[in-house]
Every structure is written in structure tokens, then in C-alpha cells.
Length: 170
Image 1 (cartoon, rainbow, N blue to C red):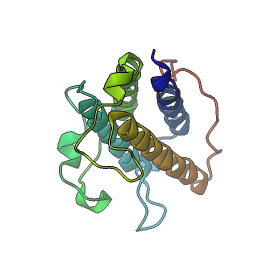
Image 2 (tube, helix red, strand yellow; image 1 turned 90 degrees about the horizontal axis):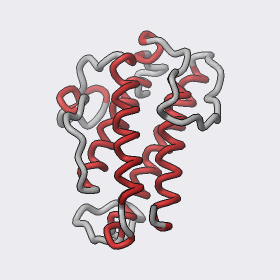
Image 3 (cartoon, rainbow, N blue to C red; image 1 turned 90 degrees about the vertical axis):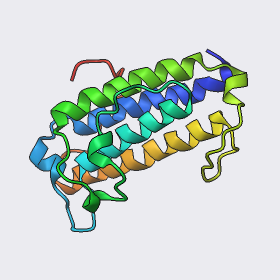
């Protein structure tokens, strides 16, 4: 793996594992609960993250099809625009699959590929594939923090900062 990809790869794998840790001991009733009317549910955040990672795979030139949440999320701008979301039993393997796929994709990117300019602009990114990946991994982390906080708001233990490999059984 190119040195330029190593921190991206490490963050990607860590976030993959940490989201799965957030879903431990969580049932569908808890995952669909909104702690306030203006708060996203955990299941919505997980679906959104899966969708964002599919976007990232496409941006990196290696789409993974099908995107299992594309039809449900459609052109939704937020949770109130979405109908029924898939259960955790479907979202967990979808998260693992896109996580494993992206880990392989990022590990295989050359320094030249990472430096390739892209048309899509992201805040504080440098206009390259590497900048886009960095921004979208920060996006992962942002929503991962929301999921961890929602767990606590429901009276569940905090997220374990245990970076077990994402492929480890849960």
C-alpha cells in the first residue's frame, strides 16, 4: 500500500469496526427510535453512511453494486423524506461489505490515483481523490459520533473503542 493511502485506510477500517461496535446489543426498536422529533434515528444514520460509502466507492472508480439502501433513501434530504428503513440484520452485512470493499480499494490506490483531480467539491478538501476520501471519512466519524451519543441517550453503554477487524463476527 502506498504511504499516502495508509492513514486513509487505517481510518476507514477503524470507522468500519467502531460503527459495528455501536450496533452491538441494539435492537430494531431502539435503532428506529428518535430521541427527539428533530433527531435522526440510528438506523437512518447507518443507512446514510452505507449510502455515502457507496458514493465514495464510485468516486474512487470502483463502485460496489447494488447499493442496498439507494432505493430507500432515493433523493431524500433527511429522515422525514424516507419511508421504512431496512432492519439492522440487513444493514450490518451491508456496512461490512462496503467497508471491506473500500478497504481493498483504498489499499490499492497509487499515489498518482490519489492525486487525481475530481470535479466534486468537498469542504476543506484539496480537489483530489485523496482529499475527497479524507473528507468522506471525516463524514463517517461525524455520524459515528452521533450514533454513539444516541446509544447513550437510550441508556445503553457507550461505544467500545475496540477496533476489532470489521470482518470479526458480532
